[in-house]
Length: 258
Ligand code: PEP
Image (cartoon, rainbow, N blue to C red):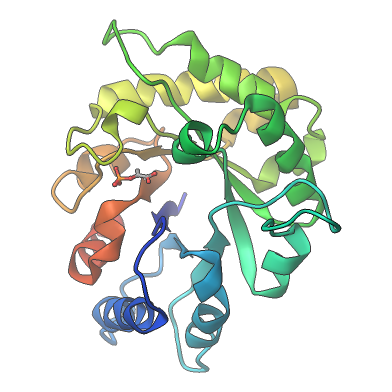
């Protein structure tokens, strides 16, 4: 299966000029006329305000590279008096095929709860978006055991989701202690989590969730990406900090294709 590589730019960079510069340098590096980058699905999730210009840049006619656009969040209501929020239709209209839901920074700083996440999931799926659902524990006391909270977050987010939507669900295992710290989980830890996540998803969505893509995220870099993606059970990576450096991100993408 093609590996999935998701870039989460978070609230960076600060100007549209800088954002376009990063995207253009990155495109130059990965295209390189070698047609190498074919076997992975790349999704770039910039801040909402850059989506429109990114869509235009990614649609250039002779771009062989298939890069998809994702939003970093979406609201659960479809329209109306919800100041500051952004709807599924708005992000689809701006060319997004994917949306991140439940990132730990939103859970932490915006008090997003499992209930709120569970309201966003079906709305995004119904709109035809692919969701990248983020789950992960704050601390791990026993390195040989994935905390129950991971299972609980998956079960709560997918509760009531229609089985027919299984093909549009991607889950990113992102232990909070590994995000932005420079200390990634071990590939074995990520594998254990992926097994638990798929098992939990299968309890809700049935056998079709057996092949549900599970990504790893948390301090992934060009130096360690290979260790994660070389496992069959890890279907790709979600990258924060390293995705803002075009050279580093290009190296990660090329590793996933080698
Ligand atoms: C993230 O933002 O989800 C993330 C994994 O960040 P980083 O790669 O910087 O740890």
